Image (cartoon, rainbow, N blue to C red; front, side, top):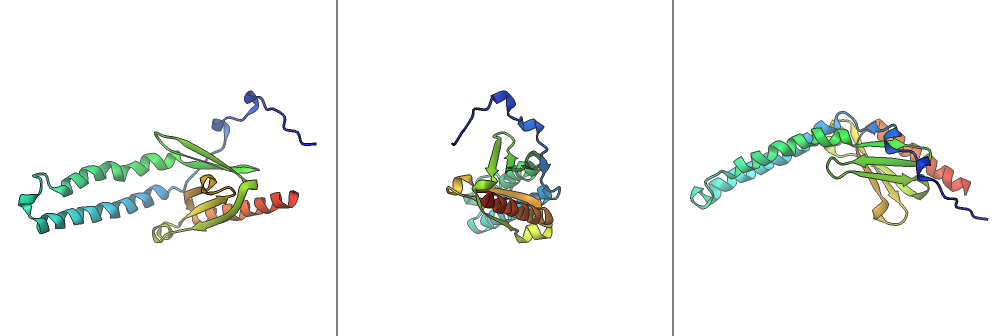
Length: 172
């Protein structure tokens, strides 16, 4: 007969007791480089637009100056946000946390996982990083993506999760 006993809230483990694994140390620099490329494109586009449109039609403050004012916090933010991301691998699930102002913690039980893949972009390969994406049953709302893992770590996690998923299927 199926039983589902209650669990006292005091018995639940706290999030601070978990052994959070940080993302790879190179990930913040990788994000900064990606953002720097975007800023340089914006500065180039704004500079070209001032020459094409002409100085009489634009505000007295150069657009590229406004872009640069925005660029400083945009480029610095990864140094604040990346260290606050991390994951915990447990026996029956994986937990990921992120956020500085709005914090998020997502737990994905292995018995809900349908597919796991690791991928990387050219910038990721340059920094020897990878992304792990976990697809769950029940739609995209439960999917989890962890960016900024070392390439070897992402592959090892993918294999470990797939082993766990296979073990949970066999135990049913």
